Image (cartoon, rainbow, N blue to C red; front, side, top):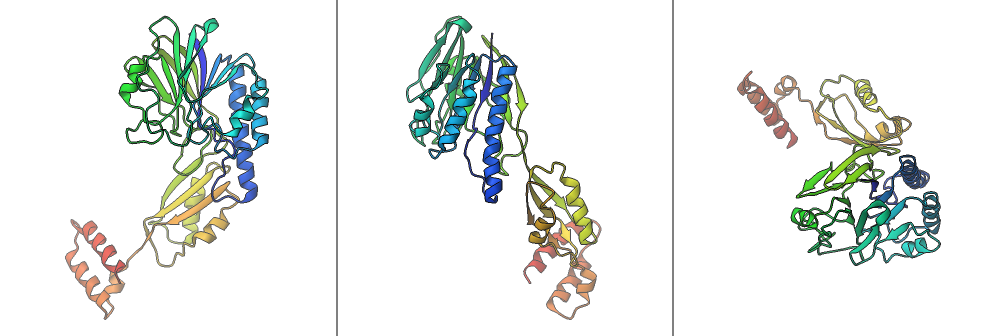
Length: 357
């Protein structure tokens, strides 16, 4: 049995869209902070092996200071083996990896373009890995690979996509099963997949350490636990500094703007987070939902907040039917046709019809 930590998609030096320069710089600092937090946790938990499954750096433009930061935190854990499989954002050919290898302790292994095996006899474990050479990897890097049939624990660290049409190392379920590995640590998908199994092989995406957009909601962190022959006892540990939240708010029952504001405030449970507020439902005509005004109003209630207005006007068919206009004729006829059984249908008809005027 060996205790591991599985990390992926750290994206050091990534820039976050839509932020001010100061907040963007702060966010980049937070990626480092969370990465160091993960490394410290590995030390505290007596982890023996850290598997970093790609995209540790966000691009070839990684700053020299960031590389020095990584060296520094790795130097704190010389007793832990660290394996890095570069991904599509940080292929092993980028200068950051060349710089990282200089004066880096022997416990750090960066996989390159050929599938390699590193034996750790003291842990009765073999670690296999391969890295991206460039942004795209059209063919499956695990094709035809299987671990030796012996009593050692077999770990695979790799960046790839479980989609057959992917350009980022497409990995099929059959390829996973054919490895006969005890555990495959995957990177590329930014959401924790759960602990999965194909054949005898357990595998998982740990997800990213920090979220990067509104398509990456929920907790972010690492996997940590024990791997043994045919067994994977891993738990997900959230470590993110901030989260991205998407909240839909129905304003149909709001009488005035202050009712809408109260509903919004009730959803902002974490003031250090990113929020996308989607306003839906039927809005009374007197309520002015100016998204710029709302963003300014709540700018101190979240790290970042934006609004999307998807409301529809609340129609007053009684008032419209009194008009001597085409709208009035239509509204009167809809009222005549509508009843308790089909009122929902005619509500949709009215929404569509009056949306054309």
